[in-house]
Length: 95
Image 1 (cartoon, rainbow, N blue to C red):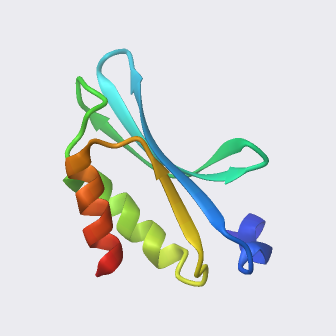
Image 2 (image 1 turned 30 degrees about the vertical axis):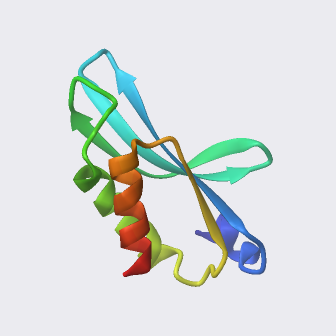
């Protein structure tokens, strides 16, 4: 958090994505985008055979990020998620 403490007056870009390891583990990661790079911020590892995971798996990470980044009023979430998961993200941000 110290690395981005001076960014409160700027838009903060977050990237949400999944990565597969050995066709056995799926890593859901939320990263802060800085200088064209995604710097890992929060992640969750699941034993899962696909990178397509239910919104309920993303929910914990997004709620934690919401709490940790509450001082940042301008956040843009970049995500390549299925429509069902994106609906969940919109509902989560409205609550």
